[in-house]
Image (spheres, rainbow, N blue to C red):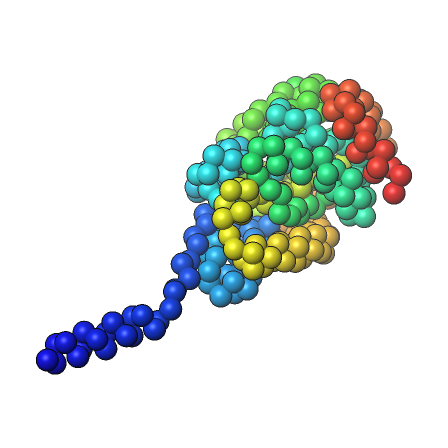
Length: 324
């Protein structure tokens, strides 16, 4: 009799408990270290999403290329091996020249211009990722790029034959035009490459140089505002569509906040990173007039080449960018 009563009570409790929302778990690979400002921004994004969805969507961030290498992340999201990920868009310029626009020298040389270029390119990027079953959530720029070198550089000719880190097709083409020797090295491998002498010069941001402690081998940074590459956070459209409407709305809201926070942080830290390089004994200076002119010539050539490769979509982007 008691057993029957207990059974009825248990049944009533279970029936009255109502449905329990299942937690959705997403993996988010990124290539950058835990202390990089992009990664800390993404960690905040993940926390915001979990809080806004009452734990229904939990995003686990895998930094330092621990889950996938930088060049593997886009494919991982596209094939469903990861639901969401962060990519340096210009790594995929060989797929489509549109992906490399923000690394073409001297197209956008400050944050206001960087925002205009982002907005002009967004429709074309949305179309491309949609065709591949992905959705762009937000983008955040690196601080403005300059040139690091183990030796002083007074002109473009000083780079002839120098081992130059080429982390994407655009930086590789820049090396060719400067008659440097391109060497493919990703961010996670930069410190080791510098320590072994595999790299003698490269273009990247003050932030990347700071995170890699390049002052241990490199003594010069030419603050030339060459370009402003952006990292993009992408999500599988299938994974996104599987969320309920409130969760999707919370994710998009957190993404918009992460984009604004990331742009603001990048701009605020730009000067701080330069100061840190100098504080660690590096010579931080603008390029000489001759060096700047040589770099500008390279940039003009690369933009002409890009326009020819990108076709009508490229012209639409540049026209929209220049008209604003």
